Every structure is written in C-alpha cells, then in structure tokens.
Image (cartoon, rainbow, N blue to C red; front, side):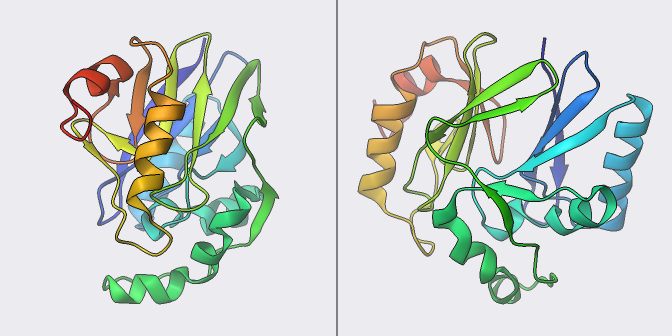
Length: 212
C-alpha cells in the first residue's frame, strides 16, 4: 500500500508529495522546498520514517514545483525526472523567479525524460505517466490504478483548472487533456493537485464550473 504525505511549501503554497510503501523507498513529486526549514522538515520526515528517497519527479517545471530539485541533487545525488517539453521552463527558471520576486540558483538539468506510458517504479509500487499538456507543454500526471489516485500538478484543481497565461500554456489543449485523459478515469479516483485540497474525478466531472 502506498502512503502519501503532503507538505505545503514555499511562497506559492505548493503541494510537495512524498509517496512511500513498506519497502522504505520513497519518491518525491514536485520538490517545492525553498526555505532551509522546509529542507529540515523533509529530512526529519525521511529519518523518522526510515525512508530512502530514490526518485525526484516533476509534474511540470514551473519554479514553485522545482525549488527543491537542487537540494535533492546535492543531499541525495538524485537527478530530476520530467518531460522533455518542459526543459525550457527549467532552463529559464532563475529568470522567472526574479519576475516573481524570489531568488533561486539554476536547478540541475533533467536527468531522465519521462513520457506518456512510462512507469515510475519505487519499492513495490508503480505510477503510470500520463501526458496532460495545456498548463505547460510537458505536464505529466502520475496514476496508480490499483489504489485509485492520481497526482496532476497544476492541470486540475478542486473547482478549477490550471492557468494557461504562463509561457507554454494553452487553454484549448488543457481542456482537451482533462476531458480526454483525466475524465475517462473512474469517479472514485482521488486527485492530488499542485495547490489546494484533494478532490475526486467524479466531483470535478460533475461540479467543476469549467465543465459542468
């Protein structure tokens, strides 16, 4: 069984997720840790739960979701995994951070590209990659069919959808991604978003004002 721990990090109130199972291996999705005390929170959590971080993956590469990539690379020698189409966002992240009034060192390059249909394996568990562009060109969702949950980054929120006014965003593409890739899943699938509370596919299909 997969356990999911949510951390609320950085000035953008981003959800960083740590997924782990009985093996003790864990995967970090969207490492948003920005402040030193946020790094300490993660370190203590790993230590107290006897966890070994083995993968750091991104749903997409906007700055609030990649602040911690450099820390994981330095502390745990873990390379970032993300979709190749978001590489320009990663490469321009230091400049983008200045626009929002924050500073960040250039993050490490993507060490492994993830694509539609790929599997993210850790311990005894597997996540399946689904390409859901629109918020960013390389946005990925990570789905576990057995336990009926999906991590979607900033593609879909409780009662809302991701922004499309940032570089690489496209409203029509985003709506198509949600309709064709996410809303084909079962109603009971729990949706973990990049910001805000969890929801379900059924709830968003029925009540989300962008679709109902």
